[in-house]
Each structure stands twice: as structure tokens, then as C-alpha cells.
Amino acid sequence: MTLPNLPGLSILDTSVNSDALNFRPNTWPPEYGFPVIIDSDGKVISRYGDVRWDFSPWHGSVLKIYFGDGPGNGYKVSRENADLLRLIVAWWIWGPGVPVTSRTIAMKFETIKPIFVICSKHNLCVSELSQYPEIIKEIALNGKFSHQHLLTYLHDISFNSDKLGFKILDKDGMKVFTENLKFDDSTQTAYIPPRIWSYQLLRLKDCLDEYLENKEKFEELFKHCLSAYKSKSASN
Image (cartoon, rainbow, N blue to C red; front, side):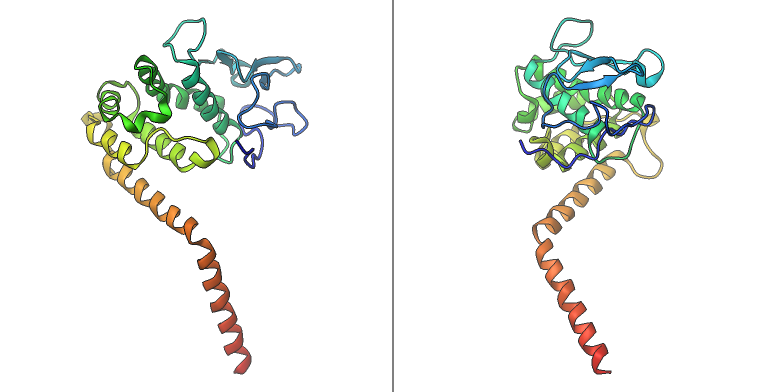
């Protein structure tokens, strides 16, 4: 996979040093031995391939995430799915998104992990989930997660699928998922209901995809209009 243009480590609760070993991966996906978390003394706390990443040096108190493909307490995940989950978290840490705290990364991780757990129970790679509407339905009905947040994360992963090399749900899969989500009154927003929000995100992605497919034509149109404007201005 081609190494994307990564701006570097973007975690709010740790100092960022462009010379640090963990500032930016030199391969994508990062190599298993690549250091993710380094403490203030320069000691490597967690490496990319570890079963558990320990954010405690960043967070200031105990904070860990468990990928589930090795020994430890927590829901189990197949190695194949755990590696895709690692890649998503790596994108959140080193990608071009808005810098966040390690606590936010951990919360996003816990929100999206149930999908990987259920897929692993079915011996299914999460990148193939869109082909199995019944399992999508099961996740929507039984997954314990924040619905609004999960929808946002799924759309973000789909939008960046060219960088990640996979997507969890395609357009049809997302439709099945949103149709089967059950929302309690307490989780409804008074302004934009989650299903409408999901629809808006889908339409926005369609618009952006169409623009990317035709961006050269847009640039040509802009240059033509600019040239016509300059020509008309010069003749006045």
C-alpha cells in the first residue's frame, strides 16, 4: 500500500517532536515494530503490533486499548480484523484529521470495536461485511455503541478508504445498517435525527466523489472563465 501523506503525530495531550521515533510511520501500514507510544524518558511503551496499546504516558493516568488478537481480558478479535482495527487507530493518530486527545482515541476505538468482534465471531473479515446484510443487521440490533458517533466514524472510514485500503460498509451496507438501528428517545437529537444525518453524510460523500472524478474539468472551466474575464477587462 502506498504511504499516504501523513502530517505526523497529532495527539493533544503529548508534546510533539518531529525528531521523535514515533512522529510519523515510514511504511503504511506501519511495521509491527514501529513505536506508537513513547514516554517522557524516551522509553517505548507500545509498538504497532502489540495486542494492547498503553496510552497512559499521554493521558496521565491508566488508559489502554485491547485489540483482542492475543492474551488478555476483553472481547477477542481475529488477527486479520485486529490488523484492520490497528490501521484505523493509526489513521486517527497520524492522519490529517483534527488533533484529539488520547482519551478521544480510546473512546472512538471502543465505539467501533464491536463491529470487529461480531465479524470475528462469524469468521468474517470486516472489509467483506457489506456482502452479508444479515450480519450487518445483527450488528445494528445487538451492538452496544453510541449510534450517532459510530455512523460518523463509519462514514469517515469509507471516505478515506483509498488511504486505508478498505472500507467497512459500502453505500448499500450503510443503508442496511441505518435501517436496522434502534434509537432510544434519550439518544435522539432535537435537530438532526441520526438517520437523516447519515443520509446527509452519504449525499455529501457522493458529491465529493463526483467532484474528484471531474476535478480536472472544473479546473479547466475555472481557467476558461478566468481567461475570459481577463480578456474582457483588457478590452474595456
